[in-house]
Amino acid sequence: MDPRRAWSAEWLLNYSEQHIAYEFRMLRRLAFLQLPSENRAPTYRRAVIEAFALHLRAIVEFFSGPRGDTEVIAEDFCSDGSPWDHDRTKVLGRQRRWASQQVLHLTAERDGSDRGAIWKPLDAITLLVPIIKAFLDIADDARLHARARDEMNHLLGPYHPEHPEQT
Image (spheres, rainbow, N blue to C red):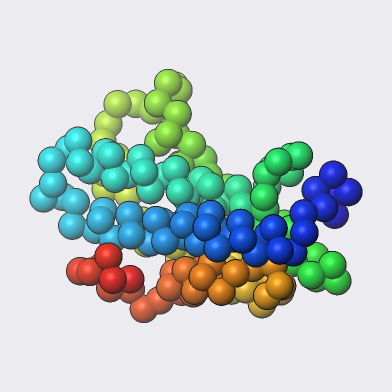
C-alpha cells in the first residue's frame, strides 16, 4: 500500500460502516425501484436511473480504482498478504461507461433517447456478484465492518423486488 494511504484498520472499519454500507444499500434499493418503472412518470424513471448510476459508478470505482491520494478502494480493506486483483474487475468497464453517461449529461454519447429507462439494473448487479464474493473472501474483518459486509451479502440474493425497503 502507498505509505500516503496508510489508514488505520479502525478508520477503515468506521468508514466502511457508514460509507461503504450506504453505497451498497442504495444500489440495491434503487435497482428495485426501477423494476416496475414503466408505469412511472418519465421524470421519476430518469431520477431513479441517475441515482442508481451514481451509486453504481461509486461501487465500480471502489472495486477497480482509480487509485488516488484520497479514494478509498477495495484494496484498502484486504489483508497485507491478500492483494486485490484488479484484473477481475475489467468486466465492469461497460457498466462504468454506462453509469458515467447517465451522470454526465453533456456528452455526444447521449442521443436523447430514453434507452436508460429500459436498462436492466439487475444485469449490473449480476456482474458485480462474483466480484463481491471474491472481495468478501479476502476482506479483513478488522477493516471491513459487518454492516458493510451484510449490505454486500444482500446483493448476492435472493432478491425481493416487491419490497426494496426490506431488502
